[in-house]
Length: 275
Image (cartoon, rainbow, N blue to C red; front, side):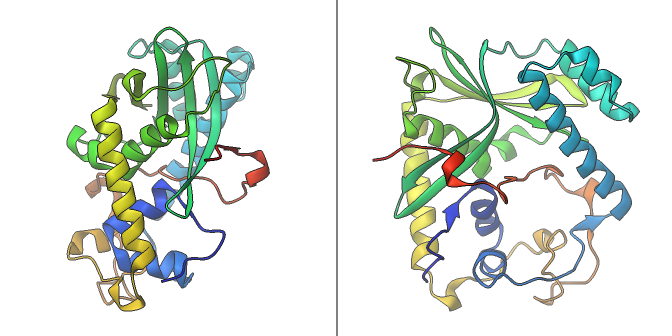
């Protein structure tokens, strides 16, 4: 299977493949538009997505130097104001002072590119690098579920793999790297994963195997998932004859705001590491 020449692997499309190879084929190769809802209730989900997007924008402005009191003034929704105050008052994570908000990294990998947009990369030259990811989900997913997510593995691997000198004379090391998920409704219950060389090598093997499988698959090898429950939250479920009704978001462990948000990026604006 020949992927488009400009194709890049991200946490979203790799997770789609892990969840269901057929979904990957329909979405990224055939680019099939199918109007089914992903989840119910629709209005609540849409509002949550909008608030999640606005929260990420608020945090970006905060780390870009905008006075938080000014940002608070423009939080018209009470929930957004609560989230932002939770962030300002949280003590579960100590964030290094050298910060790169909404930072995109890319690196050649297995004939294509790995690409990731980070909510925040923070660096202490003496202690190492930290990846932070903001989540507006209504509940905290189980740690084992988070640990297996492509995002957790790809984000840490790519930052260590790229060797990007984000600041002068500092190279990101797998031995001094961590990734933390921070939840707007649970400010003191962040989930942190420490990285090391063994994890780095395991993730390299995993991503090489996963991307190689996708690249080599023939059109008949993108099979439907055996996990029918996943289909409830897929826009292609009726096309695949896996039901008509969308699943209730309260029954899903996934993230409402889990997205690469890379639809309008340009590689001219990406920190790409040559090899």
